[in-house]
Image 1 (tube, rainbow, N blue to C red):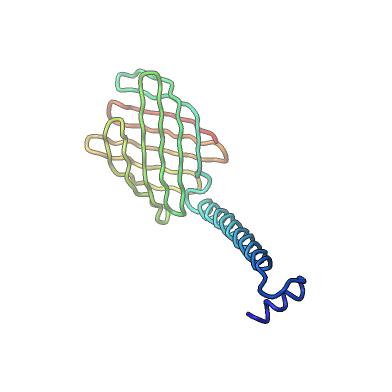
Image 2 (image 1 turned 60 degrees about the horizontal axis):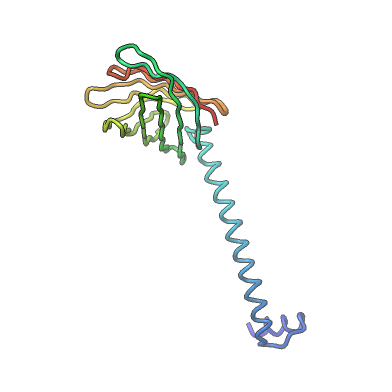
Length: 184
């Protein structure tokens, strides 16, 4: 350590142990550590994004928005506006889908895991205080799942291709169907 300081002092024209030399060394060290931390953060971000995009939910991560229609038990149909957010981490995905019209709204949240093409998980619909399970199959941007709860079953088909996504839900209760098209 003493030899390094002597070498730095000789090369930099500074006297050994000077406060100015120590301050410059400290600033250089802080700058290098900051740069290393920034490089690590960027690399970790790209690594986790690449990993998320390589899993069964590849291409879904992020925020989506669009519109569609909802069909109620009496046969009436309403136009709806929707927003979806997908948080993807390898074989795991958390989803939030919120859709609303002037008279109708639903807020669906789900947490799913893919195990070799079999998709399982849980869901909640907070505006009606309903929760249940999900199970089905999928991969490569195409998923077919059954959402179940006491007195409620719905088939959900989800297709993602590039920056477009379609969601079709068919149910056996007051909420009969929804057809939604989203884009990034």
